Amino acid sequence: MIAGIAKEIGTSERRVSVTPDSARQIKAAGWDVLLETGAGKGSFYADRAYEEAGATIVPSTADLWSRSDVVLKIQPPLPNRTLNAHEAELIREGGVLICMLRPLSNLDAVKILARRRVTSFSMDMMPRTTRAQRMDALSSMSTIAGYKAVLLASDTLPKIFPMLVTAAGTIAPSRVLVVGAGVAGLQAIATARRLGAVVEAYDVRPAVKEEVQSLGAKFVGPELEESEAQDEQGYAKPLSAEAQRQGMEILQQRVAQADVVITTARVPGLKAPRLISADSVSKMKPGSVIVDLAADMGGNCELTQPGETVVRHDVTIHGPVRLASAVPVHASQMYSRNITAFLLHLTQKGSLHLDWGDAITSGTCVTRDGEIVHAATRHRVEGAATAKA
Ligand code: NAD
Image (tube, rainbow, N blue to C red; front, side, top):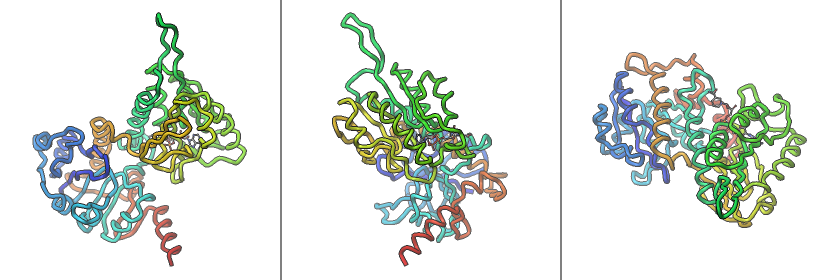
């Protein structure tokens, strides 16, 4: 069986799905490994390092995709302008694709994959279970993004983070507000604390209060019942109108006090909740900074422009959509360990063994046997087709 490491073609994407160390591990599990020339260049992994790990370098993109039984990637399949073909068309009919497919946002790619009878797995659909923890790429990328968001903010803020007592007087510490204390938010809290800021965190899930406090930050969320704010999997769920009103009142006050606001709030499968209005931004101190890590899902701030940095009311608003890619070495290393663990989970005696009774295998599968098997994606595709008719 052949596993192919494809070169990422997304804008400003510098990561690679598999590092040389992982390529060696995949090879040891009985796979032949192909690498598209230069796939590791953006993360400073040279072709030679992959060759030393036992991989074969393939100069042609089309060859890499068509020769591989399994194509390993980070980004979902995209149109390849050089080849004038969609990546989902390059994969061998009946082949296997593993990437962060984000199927609900990439219906066109999913439809092509189903038509070509590709078995596709979406790393971002990994169940949040202990058994799947080492395959949890979403947490890996959120960890990197949470860290980098703080550095981006500190670089933009016209102030320093720590309190300083100097001969020139005392400098007050900067105030950082983290909205959404999930994986990215907790990493942002820890990073901002390390830089010496005074940190507050807002979330609707009462379960995060202790975690926030253990990192030395103050929890400023509304006092909600766990069942009001959280589903059985531990994710936030949409709030009642009253709970929303209560939360927004607190949040508006805290935003106005902050020098930096890092927002990470998401509700799975839905647009990101709108938590910071244009009016709230206008009440922030001039020079303040917002980093909106939910920009790819529409943003938590009304003024966020996904993929851009804008200045409104003297507040800089960053809307990064691929922040993990700005730290390509460690982001690739973490993703690579996740995707390799998943590939090896699907491997038995050097061959693919797809056990559809297994929650990890079936829970991440989007298309197989010519069908879209991920129910929410299938419903959206069918809904779009009905609306067109
Ligand atoms: P996420 O990216 O879906 O959301 C980020 C944060 O935004 C969450 O803390 C959420 O509560 C918060 N949020 C949502 N709506 C909000 C609103 N209206 N106002 C304020 N905050 C809002 O979440 P995540 O970081 O992926 O983690 C979600 C949960 O899953 C956490 O409990 C985390 O500990 C858990 N988790 C478990 C595992 C595992 O067991 N393997 C792995 C990773 C995460």
